[in-house]
Image (cartoon, rainbow, N blue to C red):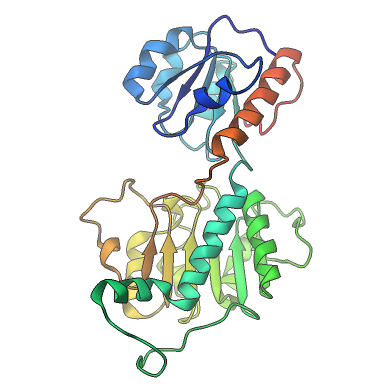
Length: 319
């Protein structure tokens, strides 16, 4: 194990990295905080930092001994990559630690939209019986033989594609690079031709990272390309979807339904109009939640500590 003169510092409001490390034989000591204010006091002596959304780029100047940051999440858009590189700080993300959990959550949302389970829950709260023949709206649908378009064929997108194929769906997929997709049987749509995929899809699932190219990728123009009977699911980053445009499409009937797990502002403000859209399912950025999260992050962390000691390639290295 890499020799550290100080304990690993972990900072997260929920995930207990310190407890997971304590269960591992010969693992380094770890001190964990839950707030940015408490983290500041530890930064001057920190060599290894395990963190995600509590990170602030100003912290870099406060951590002169910092050598390696292990992100607890796969997304790293909160980090100034150029600044980390200039300071010689290595950054690795947690890609893959919750890919199955996010894929299963996306599938659960897909079932909810296709069977309109959100309406059943609302009817339950109102004590309203609604059954076959009593509802004049379109019939409930099946997923078999439908077309699903996955935008973001990385680790999570691949898992979703395989699950959808098992249900008998036709899968289209886009990745940021032109390299062939990793899942056999998925029809590849070029990143500069998403209009083709959007027009063909019965269901669109977003799993792409947030970049300048994907910010507001789903907007009034791209929503207009989709079928009126289509649905949209976002388990990527909130700003990939332009929220006002989505609300307009759902309220006008230009889109049948949607489900969001991430949002422009989190927590979602109580006054947000998203709460009141009846054909919109909301979950509170929980797609990646899994009982195995800490275990999977620490597995990567320990591998990377060994790599740091031997100067070997690190897992999921970004910088």
